Image 1 (cartoon, rainbow, N blue to C red):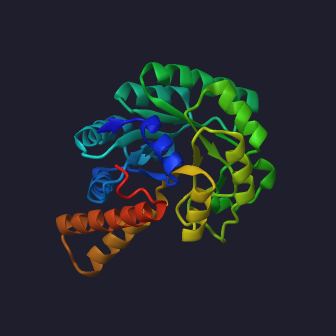
Image 2 (cartoon, rainbow, N blue to C red):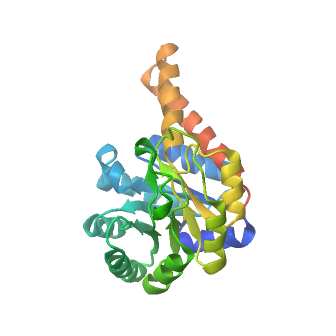
Length: 278
């Protein structure tokens, strides 16, 4: 069933578990993600991100994601991740996404606040939820995940939520997008301070590559939504490599790819504690 963030994150926050966002660029990844959720009876968030559109056209993949969500037997949020432009974020809403993340975190704080508030106003009129971001979530390839002066502060988080009305907030505590070159150092104490200050569900970006303990610690201290993508790509890469090594045909390799990605999604759901929560 198609739902938005408000239908799943409040329960996750109250229950001490997290729901995963698994970005998908094709129907192989989509089939794997939804299949894992149904088999484990877990709520799930699926979608795509603006930076991924060159690898999966929004108008092409959106109908597939939305149709899969509607016929699923578990709650499925269709989420547009890291909307970097107002135009593409609006396009996602018009195509039927039930949730959007508008990311103006690299802009001047006043611009981030004003633009996010405008997106919230419009998205809510569609019945969609909105995730915002404050602080800087690094890029692992650049090694900038440890810039502590860019971490979210409790005061900033509280002011941003009050001014924008976002339904979820991505916070910067030391995680990064992509494949980590070194072990990430998450500021759990800062997360705990933010959680104590605000009631809005919190989101951790850059989940792929974190240790099991990192996930457990951040969920324990209040993260309700985890973003995963790179791990799915690595599982797909492994499947295609195995297909070549075993001289499998296209269809058999595709089947193997779905199975391996599904296994990766299941492993994260087990870790997030959302199994059986649908």
